[in-house]
Length: 333
Image (cartoon, rainbow, N blue to C red; front, side, top):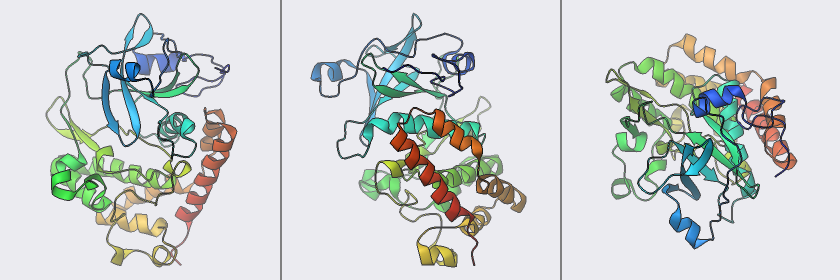
């Protein structure tokens, strides 16, 4: 593994390990090593059989991990790991698949640091052979280990393989998804603004896999429900040729698309403003969120440069941001 000079969590310069800020938020003050004492081999049947896997979403493996003796270790069978590690996918048809962990880490950090969005705590970790992995802290447990009630949007909508086919999590529109918030969250206006910002972010940063299972609500100690922190944010356009939106019906009904959207196939600022109105956000809040994302952010470029992407992927990531920002800034006329 090559020497690092930024925090593998926050990407702050001048660190060759997790910074104190990262250690506090990510590992509850325990100074864990960012280098694991094992390697991951998806083709090694003995290893795969031994790990406590959580699930396989799409093509990416997830390993359940705990902190013991200041080390990140695989959770034992039946043990509830508080962290999830995602190695680079083994799916050979993905472009630049070795860059997927750094891509997800960078995208999550941009959401948190640049746009002040609430995200799952996350960092990079490295297997013993130097290969990178993405690590995230689970947010569905309380500090004393109690499981928090949580449901994703496909569950809220009652969509399963039986009801909507194998692509059930990609059905509907983001306007339909917004209706689930209004129906299930008491303080829905606050959470609707967070949802709106997340939809805009996903468009701006090329996350073409923001399907129904990537949005969730969870129960608060008072029994209400709120949106969970953002998770699974990734610029998928670097790895696959996908569309602007994961959901089959896009933002909202086609008949209300702007002329720009109809002519180019890509939404502009006016479409997101219309979307905000249709999901009943106050005009002041819509304008505030739109203005934040329509402004080019120098910190985005700084984080890209300090990220663990290779130089080619950094150039692709910058170009993707610039192209989508230009689309987003376009006038309807």
